[in-house]
Image (cartoon, rainbow, N blue to C red):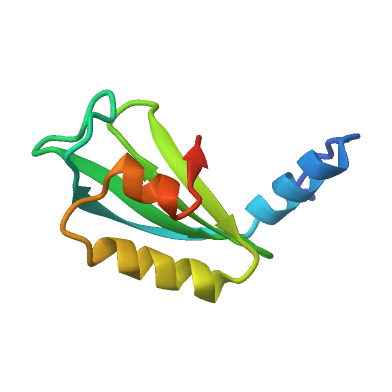
Length: 107
């Protein structure tokens, strides 16, 4: 039986390297939430997708419309990210104004 080939890539940007390295081991959960904003477009029923992604050394909460309009926030501590994710899911509506006030940025 032959050996499995390993792909080797050289990334000379330290920030890109860390991002790529941390994506190797990631997992995420997502949920649909109601919105009153236009996310260009929304999912059916005026919904956006809210997701929590855990990477090897950080977490991210993201909110996306049905195409490429989104906002996100990164956290050094996945427990803080999970707490904010849960808090967003408990909201009646997810709005851009709310996300701006919580420090989310356009993605």
